[in-house]
Length: 173
Image (cartoon, rainbow, N blue to C red; front, side, top):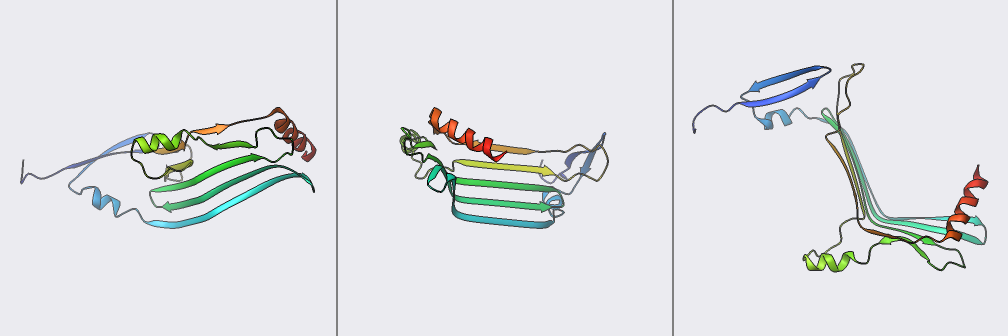
């Protein structure tokens, strides 16, 4: 009914107590209370890591490109995001029959063209939101969002590659 007053309902949880708040103030007024306390964002064009057993024997090479990370802490929530556009792991052993261990699936590109999507989505997207809770012992930790998106990947392993990595790991201990 136009002209009738609007009422907004909000249910909140504090320890074991549920509170129903009825107010004439809408969500915009409530959002104004959320004050950013800390924000950090980082972006890398790419990063690579080589696993070398000796000076002349590289076992593996891992690389990730277009990496973006962001952390925001506010009065109402903490949010962390990580996006990796491309991810790849290569078997660098001389006798490798399958040099590419992990890569984005080749079948993804034709499917995207069929749906008229011009660019590839990121390989990995992680996002976590945690609500701020009072410093009360036993207070529940609330995660309204936990998102893990992993695009279709191809994984090809050789026994010699796994054995070489396991031998290296045993030497580290």
